[in-house]
Image (cartoon, rainbow, N blue to C red; front, side, top):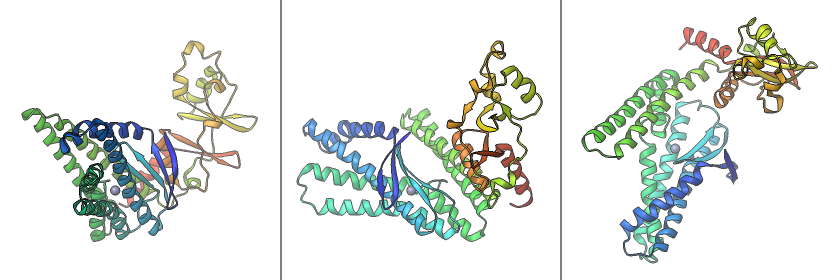
Length: 370
Ligand SMILES: [Zn+2]
């Protein structure tokens, strides 16, 4: 759901669709709230024009912050897929975790540092200017302010925000254990999250402040994303160096595309305890069918409908190669909310990898080494 707008320093930049809504909202709230408060007695066209330019400066600042992260990642030999500008911020799609505490520290710190430098540059230009024309003064002042906010917000020591990553890098540098330092950083992040939410609840109870609601949302967002990052680190740690080929199921139970749903239920789902099957026609993979697809159809129609009518067809199917890393399979499944991936080599189905294959590996590995 994002639009590619171009490349900056060889990094692809995309806009998520929510960005357009937020851009409009921010321009609007600046024009009717912030700017009239700061610069009274101006024309409404002044507020609207300055509002739009200021919102553009905010997004430009977020973009530079993300570019800084991406460039520093590349410098540390970590590939970057691209930058997506979102609702209230940006995300650099850095493909892997940094390999050393030092690299992590530099990659995380360079973002807030960029924002602080930008804030200082805008502030200096603002203070040295003659305050003419007024629209430029307003834009400079806002840009300086918003970059400072960006730096402070990102420095909150809550994982996976920059501040949390810096915290993890410092702990990691001391104990040399990525997993246990992620665990500690996650615990601290959750404490911060609950602290924010707690203040929010108190604010709503005793001061009946609407801002309290924001704090509660941010608080829960922080503790949730911290927990999620810990899980991701656990999994990628356990799956490091494992290829799809090593853990895929090679003996795949398949079903023919012209079986009726009744036959599918009797011969496949009842017999084998799998939740999904690759669908074959003329020896070729043509789709995948899951128990969920089956359950969506009324049992009265199970005799007339066929597997090919309800399967996810080949064109829409996500597959993986046996040479790919197991952690890529995990990412692909989580991102798309699916439970299994057919392993395909030159159009031929050679195996299947499921979420439970991955969980089994993660569990056994975590039992023996943490
Ligand atoms: Zn950042």
